[in-house]
Image (tube, rainbow, N blue to C red):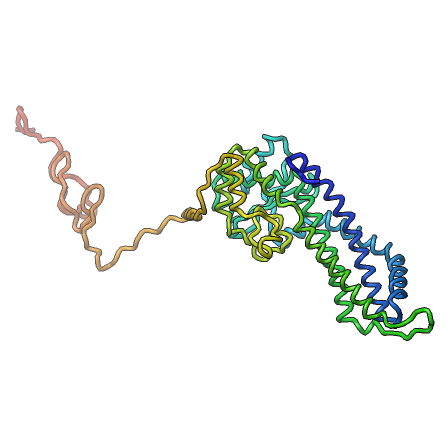
Length: 405
């Protein structure tokens, strides 16, 4: 059923999560059957019906092991997917003391809507991007790049954080993680099959038929069916990721505006991020969780994100924002000078040059300046002689004459 609003989108995501997990087991069993069919076709020269029945018996025997293996894969991904993402991206947890600006912005948004505070992570990258991850409240995390911190102002950064919080509230993050788990499991089984086929072909040795009911001539067709099943499962695993409704990004943008009450900040942030979000070394699964994924599919048909242009247009039409058009990145602030520059060394050749100071010239010899008690001395006092003016500060002459006169 299609989702037409926020709450119906949340309920739709919950149903899709359950359906995807059920579909994961179904595709795993299809892959096991395809592998068993290939093994039987390479081992016996028999009819197609015989090979299909034999592969079905092999599937029933292997189903418990396949179920346990799939459950183990889900458990590992559930508890350790964040560690895997951090290992790929190099993201690290940050505290309020380390990133007070970022931490306070996220905390204020969470307090305003009563949302539990997710973990905050920073990834060292010049790219401009952010993503949310996690399967439950204890695991939720918001990761931003250092480039995003440097290039966005507080209002724009708050809009990006609101976008990621909306993904968490809507259940988009959980759905994406489940889709990544499914794609990883299918890719693992498919790769294991092809490695077994191409690199360990000596393990399959065709044995001649010892029973008349086996027939002959069905091996080639059985292999074709097996390869087709594996190809279908692999394509479906990709389509599951691409079939996730791209409306989730429109709803997350709208949720950010609802949190911040500032559509222009969301538009400005998208314009700055546009075309600058490529995370070097990140897998496609990580890029699909980001606020913008510049890795577009064939003719935009299989893109996981709508274009920035369409998202901005929706914010302008629905939220009343203003589109400034493509934006150039603001210049980075110069790094603070931790060390004061050392004073310039005097040139010996200019040692006798005259330099003006706050109290006059510093030429050698010093200039003569009159003080309140007469002219300054013309030369420094002789060694051992106290510094005294040439005449007393008070003229002994007066109306009563000189002393002793």
